[in-house]
Image 1 (cartoon, rainbow, N blue to C red):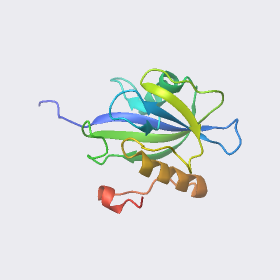
Image 2: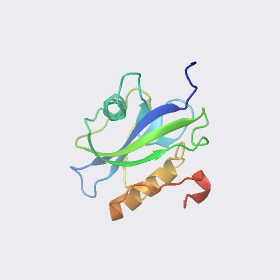
Image 3: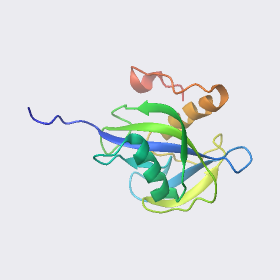
Image 4: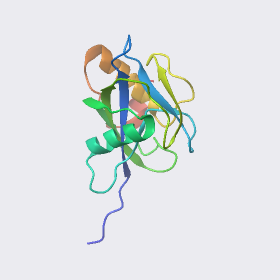
Length: 153
């Protein structure tokens, strides 16, 4: 049987800085297209778990050693990435210290999640809306069987 063609798999982490008042989050400015501000993350390598990929990508892009706290959600809308169908697993994590831009990150900033910069890349405005709801309620992202049309942005 031939190997099936499947979407690419990525892992992202909304990094809360637990050593700062209000637990601000870390965003990166993407170095490569598509342009915009983004939740740090990247592709899962063959032989790697999604969790391990998330932790590796955080060190590579922000220099932070992150502790994963929760699974926020899985985002799989085929339209979420203009480069092609990519599924991402988004975690909430915690770190301390000063992030620094590296690898695919042009710049790194620490922001209040209620006031992210614009433009946000991919579907990250919606992911951050889910995250804000998570901070208020402790509930993960809601299931969206019909994709974007049910997303209250």
